[in-house]
Length: 225
Image (cartoon, rainbow, N blue to C red; front, side):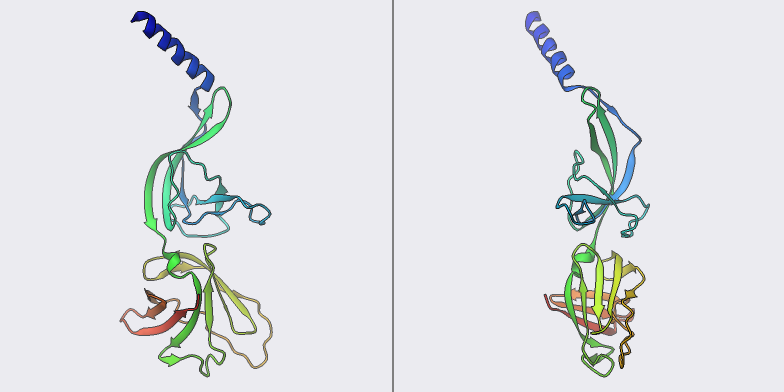
């Protein structure tokens, strides 16, 4: 029995020495993991995907502060359509010097409802009037790009874009400043690129219905694809 125990001890010591021990490397890190994987290379020259992370206290999507890190966090499983605030620790293998990132714990988790808006939409009605009408002679369409969080619109002359920062189950909580191509368009006066978007919404199948705080209808959008 003593001989067997001695052999097991030798095997354990040899295994540990071959594999190497790990030691903490750097400080604990805390950040939000974005609800969609994003390209590691923003120029699009490579096809690999990364986790998008934000180190802000409260998550509010902003491309200018979004960092890209490898998908491999030991013990962490990426959860689509959810924002997760996690704490991680890096470890360095004493022998190989390899750095490994490991999950310590998940601090917060919340649903990201941007997927309710994704796709192309036709504005069917605004302020009780069907489109097209004199205010919208060419009708109106709005598109929300998947994962990129850009809302786009056009009046047939100028294009409009707006970053969607955070979405709750029934309201777009925050968004960036709209910008346009600002071309001179004779005879066109385009003022409302996203009719109803500042109001509360409910998604019913292929319809997106915007209403005010009193429950009155403001706009109805129909999903095209």
